[in-house]
Image (tube, rainbow, N blue to C red):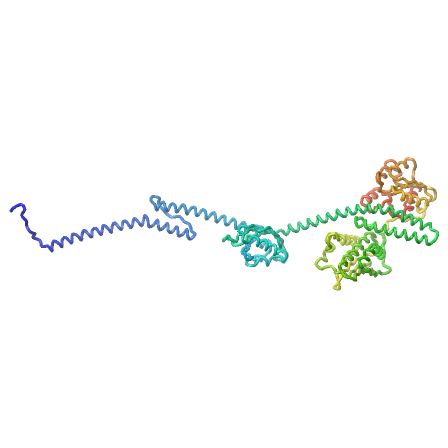
Length: 603
């Protein structure tokens, strides 16, 4: 047999195939097991290295989405670790931002809730959508009921239109500032509080959705401003009164000089007249001149407040004198005066000039109240005994005084008259005068209409401070005495000289203070009459010169003045203690004053 001899298999084919299939199965199972082991290892690795970090990362994202920011665990050795670290950095930043936002939110909440100003959010429809807690502080409890209600419901009817116009002007213009506006809002107690407001249009801002109004309570500032204006007006009125006083002082001096001449000459004519007709004519001239003098003194007293000079006064006569002063104005105004004067009224102790001022004020007020009324226009003036005194009523048929202001009409500078018609001080001054005299002044408005002003004054015995003029003082003709008259008015000097020469006096006249000093150098006088107001050297300067050079003559000086109500004149006269003759004077008054001085040094 050769090397290539072939031997056919001896094993059956079935066995060979079976053994081959089994070997293949083992290989397959071992491969599957290896694959499963590999997959399990891979799954474990993926779970640990990818799945768990992803799970934590997704959980952190879900928490952040829900508003709860927290960090996740991560290793920085792979991409997921880097992603987790980035996420943790972001989480930290978000946490810091949220903390800062919470602090900022709390800060703004505290600022708004504790601010003195009121902050409102008003929607485009005018509904209040937000109100800061300070609203209750400003407007009282329950004021937050404004929420959900139109703002106009709580505003003063006169101010709502202005605020609504300012709000409308800002609508449609995002960020537009609301014009500064003042308005009144009702307080919980029913009163009105003044507010000053501005704001910004934030309607397009979804976080606001309205106009933000910032309002401040300026009620106290308004009251202070009103008081300041009242004080300015009061100061202005006082300055006007001071100017009026100075003006009237000059007018009084200029009028009293000629009035003194008229009164003096009429008195002398009355004394010298031989027939009754001439005496009657002289009496009428003197009476008219004295009436003019009373009017001047009354006007001067209205401009200057002085200590009352109380004498025994007839109320009926005082009222008649006031009606004489106002007679022309009352007649031309078509006002009928009805007098109801009681007879035999008790006399009262009062300052006649001040009572003139009170009654003139009340009658003029009644006259002005009737100006706008149709005829008939009437003023009834009545007097009667009442409660141990005298009651005076001045009643008009005018429109009366509204009840709302009736309690304020006696307040200084309160007036309902148009500008230029009154200062608001007449009734206040009248009340002060009446109360100074121990009386009362009241007003009433009956249902039938008109106003009733009632004055009550107590009846007291007059305490006259004037020294009685004795017969010995009234006549000093025992021997001739020398009198020096000093005045820059020649007519007045002549009148005084004629009056005193009747007492057999030797009279010299000087037209100025300098001329008087020259005469005093040459002669000695028993009495010296000097006017207080003169050019170059006035009466006080002349008196100081006499007091310095001839001290024994200073007690012989008698002052003459047409402005006795002036504070400076009163102060000087009180300081020197010398007698004062007021212009216009009566002849008997001049003779009496000179007689007292002359007789004093004769004894």
